[in-house]
Length: 138
Image (tube, rainbow, N blue to C red; front, side):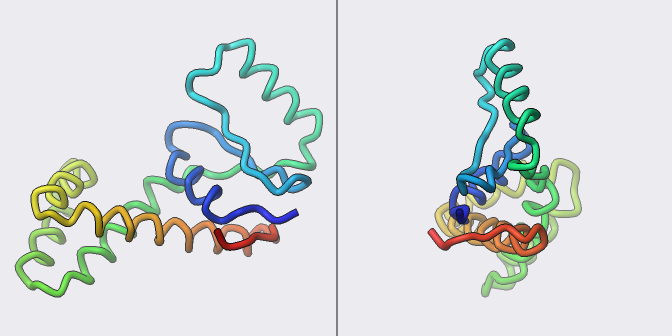
């Protein structure tokens, strides 16, 4: 079965907050929900461990990939002043938070969100290729 890149990209966007896996037998992404009770989470983990050969853990790519996306997004801004503002933020403390705030102030939030989603779709595709996991667009 093929995993949907959009589902994988969404899991990667949340990979800093919850552990996720690709079930290669069913072609789906399995996420451990943050609101799972301890007993339910353990049952879920034991189920995965019993059939570990069917699951590939999705690594936490959020921090690394988001930083790359911010750098690329800033560099692609056609307005030199905008580009400079965004690039300067990336070298200051709390860069990610400040970058998101600046994007909101500059009315670029919709463009940033679309860019970030596309970036994680590419990261998902690359990860599938590296791990020999079949995928489908969408």
